[in-house]
Length: 463
Ligand SMILES: Nc1ncnc2c1ncn2[C@@H]1O[C@H](COP(=O)(O)OP(=O)(O)OP(=O)(O)O)[C@@H](O)[C@H]1O
Ligand SMILES: [Mg+2]
Image (cartoon, rainbow, N blue to C red; front, side, top):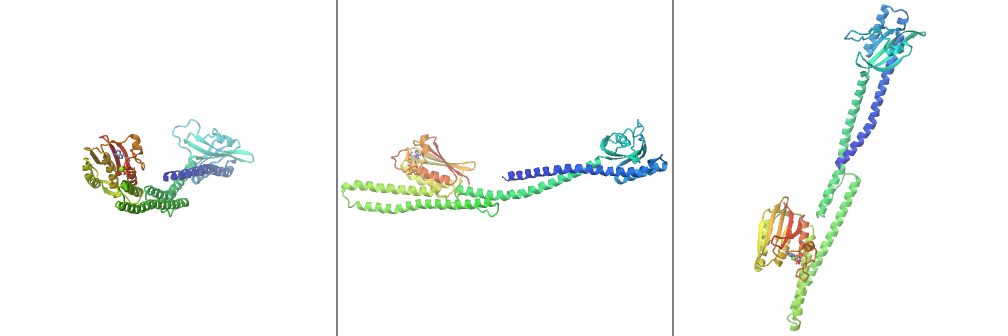
């Protein structure tokens, strides 16, 4: 999210910079060229004006020197090369005669062949650029005729290497690139701050929602900064969490209260029925015994419902529990009943600490051992195996009973479901087991054990 925000800010900035700076650079290049051209044109006309007198009639040596001085002065002050030619195109003065390495093939003093000189000598002033073979660079030239009263006396030409302008244009591009770099840097910094102001409260909301999902219904999020939409979202989150906490609390206390309130009258009813036993005739005694048994079953059902309601209670925080201690403790508690049925409970523990709410694993094992002992044939054994697997602790309870078919396994965790509807249980045990394990962030699954019976496979997060 942060990267995406950053990316979009930077894309927009780059787009704006390109749209602004490229026309700016192109415009600068054009006007720089134009500025140089018109400056040089102006200078050329001024030089033509100043040299008119010297060229008017046949030129003296003093006048040659004068023109040479004029040309030199210009080159010194402005950097452009100046030449004066007479009306035939022969050189009179040159501010910077090129140093020709090899002997020239043509007369170095004859400029009439140069196209710009030819135009100037035909009476037209010209401006343009061309490649110079002698200098090996592009040149900007301005050539102007020197004439008085309609009579042509010669021409003056000023040349500048184009690199002169191009260097300035390149410098300008570099400045623009540097500005773009600074702008991008500033925009990146600002957008990182902006993106953080959005993503940080979002991360807080996410953690809050996760905690709520884990069952911490009292969790609220605190979003004092950030965009107003996020603050509103945080407030709605908090209201929802509060409402949820209230509803779940109300439901849990209803089930708990109802079960609890039922227990007292049930106990009283049982007592009264038992007191009746002495006063009743032998004919009614069987009915009375059945009635007392029914009340007993009803009490057990209420206890089961109460246990289920408590299992759904997400209260309590998981903490490291000593799985070995719990498993060995429960095996010992059920040992007497197992012995009575000639069943052995075998414990094998490897990997000891899991995360769970104290007391829950005990209830889980009680339910599973109770079920296993119901079905375990005499002489068989019930295996309790604990193993550490990566970041979780696996607990398996295996028996040698009849096991379950795949369809039965799929329904086994439903409330009030039993394989044999006539059996004595209520079908709440496995539902309670699943609630308890899931509430602690674990998993529970059923499979067929090696001995053919049922294998209950539980995992809890390792501590
Ligand atoms: N180890 C097992 N082997 C074969 N069948 C089993 C085993 N454990 C449970 N079952 C079947 O699954 C049904 C549901 O079990 P569950 O523990 O939920 O309820 P229950 O034992 O019948 O009653 P409760 O546990 O509420 O007293 C049982 O009635 C039984 O038919
Ligand atoms: Mg059971």
